[in-house]
Length: 385
Ligand code: XIL
Image 1 (spheres, rainbow, N blue to C red):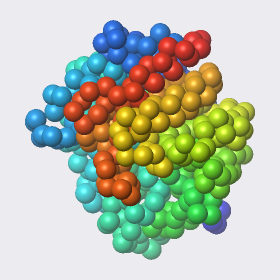
Image 2 (image 1 turned 30 degrees about the vertical axis):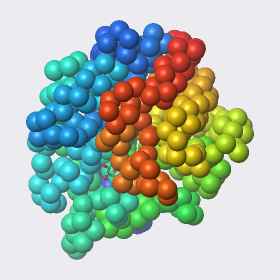
Image 3 (image 1 turned 180 degrees about the vertical axis):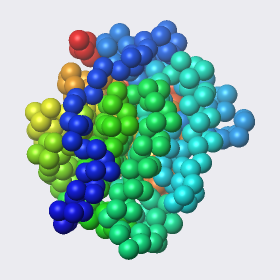
Image 4 (image 1 turned 45 degrees about the vertical axis):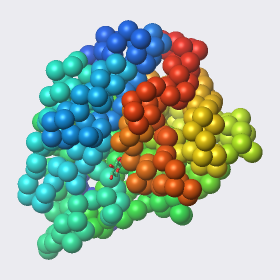
């Protein structure tokens, strides 16, 4: 990138004044949310919060939505925090380069606010071509592409952050920028026009800090503790080191936690040392941790739901025991409360064709051993200051 380009970007983002740490967030710890026997109540007793994703739907639709009373009952029982499953993504908010459509996300915000539930922002930039809106990949950035791309990104981040103000106290500013195949950063049409992936991610964070100085700013990714994630973890560590070296305002790593059971052959204990090395490296750089999207793919477990549910619960418990040992972890969110609406069934169905069971509640809204495992892990967890 030329100096002139860099200067133009810096001017747009106002990067000079933006390296301060996130301030404490008023109203962020509403221990009152959720019922007395709910998971958030157990979390709150330890200075933590429990939450889930939620979708938009028309009233009473059979969806994982606040407008579905059966799903809403799970949210109000167990959650002290929500996140929109899809409704804040560019694909949802940006029908075109010149338009925003906030209707669905606003409806989620209104419901959450009416129920005293804070909402995380997910996300301000999903840095992969396949997850950006289709128009973005063919967008004409004009004769001065770096300036046009920086303006588009800056406008997006600023418009979203300003609209919700202090109602959103934590953002996944950048989602999934590291390609697990080779640990490099993805490129999109936006980042190519802007002059590279790293300047694009940096600009997103600097802009978010300026537009939402109160908020926790998170880099969110799915590098997990299973052995086939080693390269992905290395790429994320490199990215996090780069953020620190360049003075980019990133407060936390979002550990999505889309876990995958390893069958009965490999125990969770075998994964622990490597995983702790990763978490230790992340926290040593001063990053906080957030579990942003917990669910479990019941791979290499037999079809029998009783055996599978036990395997998923034990795996979840072992994972959470490690994570909860880190005082830098405050918030734990699952990616859906019930198997009925989980994205996993569409994303990676089981090879034997039986339905996935990735969530704390089953497809008839009954609590599963996974919910009990989360409750037990929270009960056993050390209290955070
Ligand atoms: C998923 C949603 O659950 C699906 O409905 C959608 O089709 C694709 O996105 N990592 C993320 C989430 O950061 O935004 C993804 O959500 C799941 C993986």
